[in-house]
Every structure is written in structure tokens, then in C-alpha cells.
Amino acid sequence: MSGSLSLLGPDDPVPFRVTQATAEGPFVLVSDHAGRAVPRTLDRLGVGEGDWERHIAWDIGIHGVGIALSRLLGAELIEQVYSRLVIDCNRAPGHPTSIPDLSDGTEIPGNAGLSEAGRAQREREILHPYHDRIAESLRQRTRPTALIALHSFTPEMKGVKRPWQVGILYHRDKRSAGIMLDLLRQEGDLCVGDNEPYVLTATSDYTVPHHAEGADLPYLEIEIRQDLIADEAGQISWAQRLARLLPLYWNAIS
View 1 (cartoon, rainbow, N blue to C red):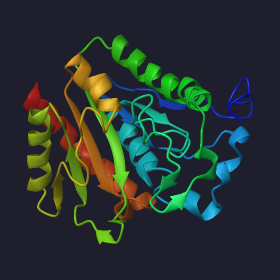
View 2: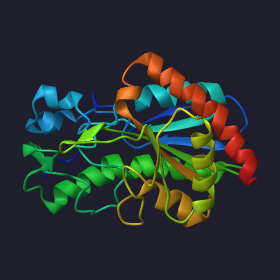
View 3: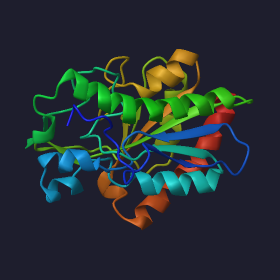
């Protein structure tokens, strides 16, 4: 597989999907794990079909949230369409966890023993085009911008239930995080995670550190629990909530 001239063939989708902005506004939405496509040359990575429904393959529900939120805000949305099992586009090139051979107990045979050439091919054809497209969008902006990174998380990991319904992850931009955390807590019906269920760092994440922190852009990395957005009703409900809160957040920081 690593010796082929191209990873992506004519029947494979391009690595990103863009929903164009329909209104002027401060937000650019990105979603690193919105899709679960696999290049045909990788033959489903040897992973059983049932595992492609699990959180290991993608951020369940976040595509629907992103599309609905984009429409409500009129904001551009840039989504990665390939599965995080092919390559995790929220990891820096060469990161040891970017192409896993084991994910939450499931072996990924197609990633085992991957050569450096095979890794470089996935980075070249999937990871870099996605991030180049985000960079292009941000570069073309002529007004103040906040990067909004959309993610979802599994309700249970390694037998431990996660109580949070939503979390805000952050590293340097504590001001943005603090404002959004307060807004979410004021909703009165949410258990809100402060750098939970994950902690954003310059090495564990890539999209926010690379595009936002590297350019001193305000940002939010939002994690929504997957059981809340597993169906269309939940996705629309959360998109409506975020479409109401994000302008309040922007007004507070601008």
C-alpha cells in the first residue's frame, strides 16, 4: 500500500468538505473528525464493519451539528471526511498517535507496521490538504475571526462513564474558554467540562495550536457528548444552542 503512487484514487473523495459561508460573521467552523471515509487502497484497514459505527472511527453526530450550526450562523464549515483511523487530523505530522494500530481495544491491522513512506503518503494526501484549506480560509479573512473547532466524545471510555454533557478545551486562550464556560454554566441544565474530558495541549492537539494559537486568534474547542447528538433532533438542538451562545461569546471578547 505504501509503495503505490497515490493513496487516493479517482473514486475516493477529496480530503475535506466545505460548506460555504452565507453571511458575514466572525466564525470559521472546523471539524477534524466529521467523516469516516477510507481510501479504497486501504481495504477498510482490516477493521470489521461494526467498528466503523463506533467512536473510534469518527466523532459521532458532529457532522450534523456542524452543518446545522453553519446554516444558522451563515458561517463557513471545513470538515475532514476521512476517518481518524486512517489518520487523525488533529495530530501533528509524525505524532505517534496520529495513525493508531490499536484504538479503544480494537486492533487496526492496516496500520500495524506502517512504513515511514506510508505515513508520509497519508499526511501528504489527507492531512496536509485539509489543513492547507483551513489556512487558506483564515488567510483570506478580512475581518476579526474566531476559530471554532467542533468535536464529540464517547459517553464512556474504558469502563468509566463521563458525566459532562459538553466540554471546552483550551491551552493559551483562557479568556475565550472562561467566557464560554460561564455561558454554558448559565444555561442551568448542563454538566460542563473545564478542559474535560480531554486537556488541550500544544502536543496532544494540532488544529487549534497550529491555526489559532500560532496566529493569536481567539478560539473555542467544543466537545459534545455523543449520546446527546446521535440523532437529528439532538444535533439540531445543540446547533441551536451554540448558535445562540456563540454571538454572546463574540460580543464579550470583541
